[in-house]
Length: 371
Image (cartoon, rainbow, N blue to C red; front, side):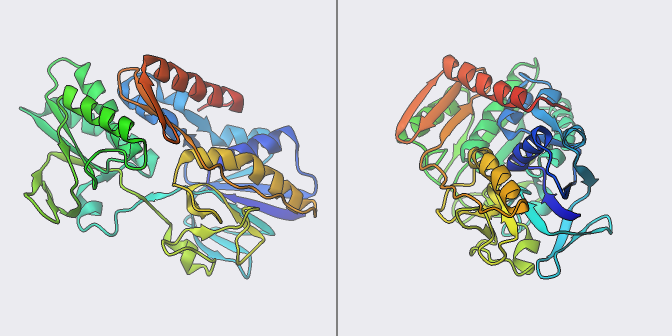
């Protein structure tokens, strides 16, 4: 019997699992490799931090999902890939051979290029590591005498959303003296989104007493101080890093074709341009038409990935997929209020948060499984 291995439990692979549960794949055994028994839906993570959702509402139970789909689950990570011998080596010492491999491991937080980041800061990814450490950080904030300075390094949509969620959570607890400072490389937060929305985000920061530092580029994170290319250092009690995505080192080391940042280059069918029996989707992939690293594209890639894996397993030709030019961005601001962007258009309001909440809950409900 031939073997299909799914490496990673990302959003695209969740759709593959749903497809396999609905339509079992004849003549193939399927294995999922993931270090965690659940997949956190990143779109709802800020809502959990802000206190709007329990973590169970934001989590997809991969172990239950794989059981329903007839897929063997391996709670481990891949760390070495041999695409010539078709071997995947895992951190638990096991090795899986494969006839077809699909990769959806998601991105890492880019920490290696910033000295001191790994030692002194808390990256938002892996998300499970952040979730495990968040209660301890909350306890530190609550126990601290005087103002607790929390710095969030990275002011993209994810960083801004995290800042608003944490500030809202602290504001709902009497006695909290948390000061959330958002640091970005441009003059306004959320680069790449419409100017009106970026200005609104800046106004919200000011309204809520959240200091903004930008444009600033960090050069080093010390034990209690962040240094920058220019200007004074910034003291902190805790630092969260929500900077750009980084590729896993094993991808380029394996001999797979990658872009200059190490992400796996794929064609319109999501097949590796160098090894067509290996596919990649989500943030780990470098698409034939460049797109931002966003969970929006991972979710959209899920159906075509599921169809193409099935086609390849059945000996049929896979179909092409071109990521959409525009993506809908829905960014919560902590207090059941949200910002929205679609191309050059933007909106804001509590109705936007209700729209986002309905989409997020609907996505989880369609999957039919939660942790």
